[in-house]
Image (cartoon, rainbow, N blue to C red; front, top):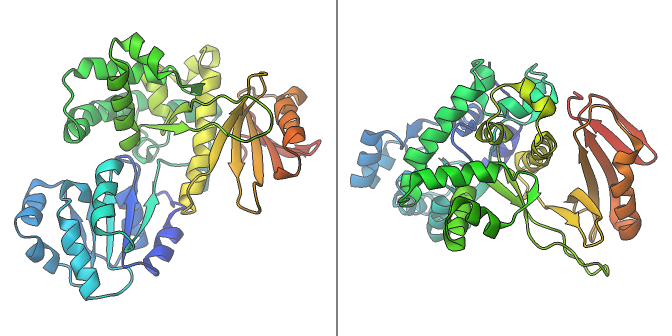
Length: 385
């Protein structure tokens, strides 16, 4: 089943403006498929292949000479020295849309791009399938099914068992990608760290507590969290800061880029388990927050998202800065219940009253399937197509 990725028009637009377009994101998110669909005229080369990688390293000029009109180069972080030669080519032969590069390790790739391709490449990010992309392909799932299956395209395209597929995905990630990114002396401790992190989705991150539960130092926990961020396993949501006379929480909240992986890590083996699972609400919040992240990234934008929590107990799950004017934003509360209750909107109304004209939109996303407006608050069911 082919999925029409929302980022494709943005890819094509950037290729009309820049000589190089770089797309990063987790493995198996669909980067290669999207790039091939966006640029069917460009030849394709996969630098994961040992023979291709060896050729590119030994003789980068000859390797690139195969592609006089440009190419899609997959997993380019595997041969970072190639980027300097690409820079020379696009400088000597200016023109838009020459090369499309993909990579799975954000830290390595960004270091290389900063050194070699600054000002020459558009940078885009692709995460697994969004709910809208699934809907557009006729895949309509309940909230629990969305949490259990996650968004990796192969799971939906081939009808794969998420439990098996995500177990293989995580094993491959630990054994291959992390060995490329860093030397991990104790893989078992790292696996435990990731599983315990999954049990904290949708919660304010206390890294010291997480490190203590795993039995590692705070420094090690911080390094491991950075690895998870760099390889698109987790994403941190920063708190919102402003001088509004309130003491605000300063630690970020922790989410997984794919909620299905988080569900598998905490032991969800079937969607039916979620109905009574104590972490269902947090997993549902993870699902919704990442939908907002995906929406921004698929438009080629940097997500300007925060959460709000003050010492008085007022909390709103998501604050979306719109850029429509100075400080204008939307407020989003997330509730996993399948039946809307007026109390769901209590916190967004309270914070909207506190922030005044800065709030241009208030929303509650809940576990149902209806979409309407009530008392000035937009009510959106997660399964509403």
